[in-house]
Length: 153
Image 1 (cartoon, rainbow, N blue to C red):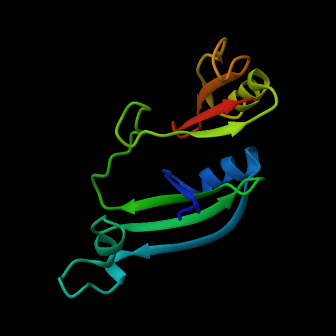
Image 2 (image 1 turned 30 degrees about the horizontal axis):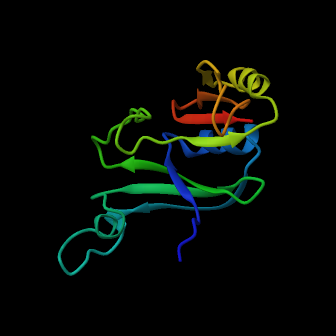
């Protein structure tokens, strides 16, 4: 049987991400690791560097932090400083690997306005009129780094 331990999100700046996810959204930083640099780690018997062998990214240098939200959801925030040439644009929800983190709030419009004042970019609310979520409101919003969040009531 499997259970989810955490999800991981690559961010452009770990300190700024922690300021937002902990300082604004209220998560708690559990621990930090790194920087871990493939250039400073042993290579495997096949000649590949440690990061390529274990993380799937050749020549990586990264620092990470694990955060937890009330209720126990854990997110690993990872800042990659190398390799060069990595893609810096966030995926769209429709892209392979596209994703979002859904946050439960009491008042979607009020939470969206509050987050907009703190650097987030809200889209328009989705008022659900029928089906199993009838009466609910959802809203997609980008965090200050352009990564997708969703507010749900």
